[in-house]
Image: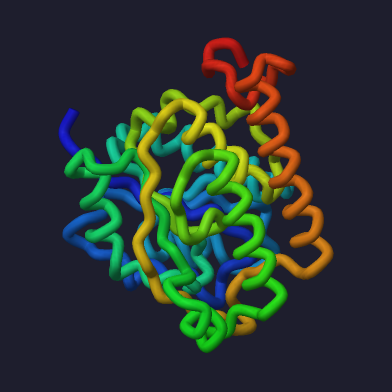
Length: 249
């Protein structure tokens, strides 16, 4: 299969930032952009269609995880050999995609993440709330220890996947909510995929999407729950569909 880089954007009410995110995508790298709209009530769909994106619409709001499921099904169906997931909120610097994609394209990593936290000072000066920084550091440390990884940011909204990852990981068994991301990385680690990351500057501003404190607390406990299921499945104490082969799901 010839290399085809597909960018997927899980979108919900992204009219203020979508075009800026799209304009930063390297034209000589990206073959197709697929936007999945999760029942936005603004002009996200109209802007995406004007920009020439492939648009898939959810008639009802299904949640962030369900949006990603549609994204990945579409990317695989459209022949993507490398799939980039980026939030269309202009928080991540999409101009750095050639470097992230390169690690996957050269078979160095199977998954690459854009790391928002190179240093504490940069993260905080970039606008990351202190409570979010502290929660990220604690969760990332625990995830690295449990999953045997050495990543700087487990909770990035900029990710690059080799096709084989999406074909192997049983992501259809995952949550339709935000904990989908934590589940996916735990699954990638369980199936032995090589996960890496590289520093990517981020922007925090009012239009950039971000879950609040209460949803973050729920997400944090959900992530810890994923790690418990991971350890339970690996030890044979429980059987979790999250870590079963896709054909068993």
